[in-house]
Amino acid sequence: MMKSSEMIFAVSDILKTVRFYRDVLGFESEWLWEDPPTHAGVRWGLVHVMFSLQPELAKRVDGHQHWFSVADVNGLYERHRSAGAPIISDIENKPWGFREYTVRDINGYHLRFAGPADYQRPKTATELLPAHIQIEVRKATLDEYMKLTVAVGWNKDIATMPQALEHSLFCVMAIDTRDGQTVGMTRVCGDGRYYTLWDVMVMPDYQGQKIGTALLEAAMTELRRIGPKGAFVGLFTGKPKFYERLGFRDGGGMTSGV
Image (cartoon, rainbow, N blue to C red; front, side, top):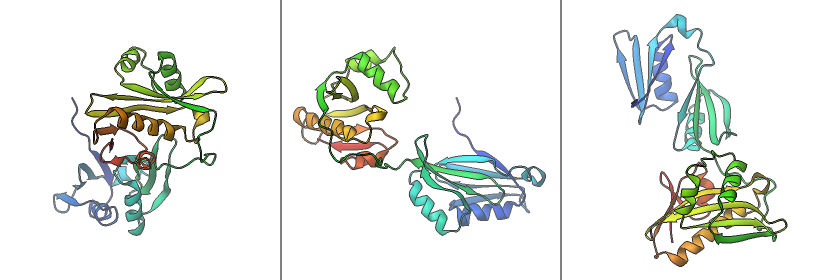
């Protein structure tokens, strides 16, 4: 079983590279091997980057990329911008679900720093839930669950989905009353003291119409009705800003209380 992974970059100047990672990028500690150094490393938290003195190989690394996952990508972006880091790709939400920007280090490596995507309200968003959308608290059918999972591009695991529904405490469903189509849902699990929200899904053509908000609000209303006051409610998401607007707090996972 693998336990960790560390990159080793070929560089033409060990000391200049270490200073760049320390003084411009913000890495917090360093070490050097031999004098003058032929190998070195820097560390920031759990992330460790090593450098090997290989001038000929370093001539051919321009454009090679490495991806860093960070907790506060917006804050780090401002820190790097203020320090004069050569940002070659500005910060933005990416289609693959992360917020990223890219820095070119002094050797030519492209360092991609990424964190959770910011919630950005669609231009087509509405202020009120459309009148033709009905919110229902009930168990989803397997067919509804599978169709929504496919519609939002998630993995469909037919073997486990019936059991997931069976063990759900309840679901909240969004129905388009014009044609009876199920256009959104979320599942709630719990034991009477701790609750978790799963599978918050809205069909792509219906997103930005307050349906996701309505699903979460209905789920929390039902939990306040059936659960003890102050019970824990948690969920996991790559879009914490959306849930913060609904009263959840980000602490490694989104949490709230009933």
